[in-house]
Length: 209
Image (cartoon, rainbow, N blue to C red; front, side, top):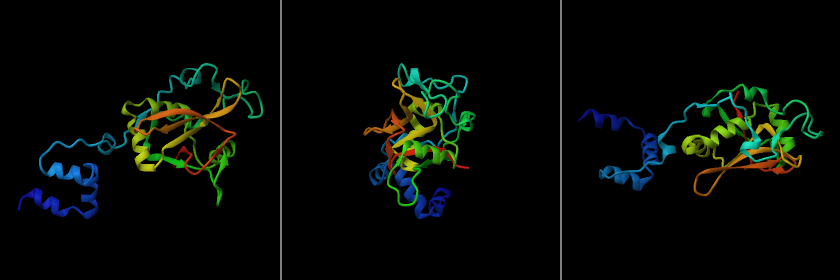
């Protein structure tokens, strides 16, 4: 028996199932065995790579979300125009993003089904570093959005927000950058108002300790 056959015999059932899955299921595996070309989805092939976050250029809401948008400054009951920017400083210090360290958080407690964005933000900032908007921009602009596809597959998320940065709309409303998965598999962005409710499917991106 050849060395290759011995290697195949050493594989567990779980490992064989994983190979079949990466080949696109049973149809893809049968094509592979027949020697036919198999197109494997990119997110099944690539392992998550460390993503560089360029901190030399801060996140600019006016460029990314539109004219009149800015980062909220000062207390949340103020006008958002004066004072320190409302951002998670620990997240701003991150220049290399390891996707395996990311966690999806709901902010819900016990049997809650919804929570306001403001309360969710306050709770989660006490528990873990919250990813800021620059990280969201880097994920959105990454070639092929590979990390977002991996996060969807691994964390089972289709909507994530970045509570490490509070945005100010042109009308003085508080919000956060959100990324959501479209039907075709690509990701787009929106702004989620912090005075509105979030459910269990409305997750925020944070960092495991």
